[in-house]
Length: 171
Image 1 (cartoon, rainbow, N blue to C red):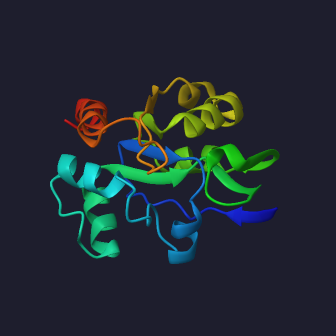
Image 2 (cartoon, rainbow, N blue to C red):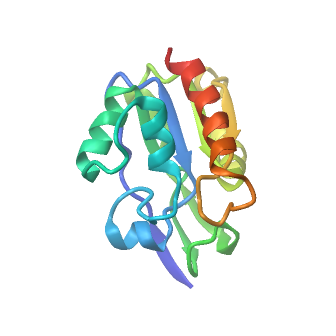
């Protein structure tokens, strides 16, 4: 198996919502950017909710996300995995990111939104129990994965779930 490493967080100092994935897939790792797979629905979904064109250059999308109060990161700092699927992550090799440090630098975060079940499970089992009580008490919500591997849910249903979760925390 290959050890893969996630990216640095994308977050403005005043970010209010943290969106976490599990670990970037192969397309994202090769491109060096979050949600780079052309069929991943993340950018079309957050673009529709936050009011920016998902076809903008990557840096402009990150700027728009930060301006909307949304931070972006992955639960895992590194792990061993073949391919892109969360189910292929070797759990024994998974090392979480430094969330205590992240929350210390981003005290305005009011909720954690997990992009899919693997991110939710990893966050609630591996990260939340290690955090100070005030941070561990933040609401954590599992949202439908934007991955093309989660094709069983139509785009409109994913968009509705993400819209409800984001808008209730950003407005």
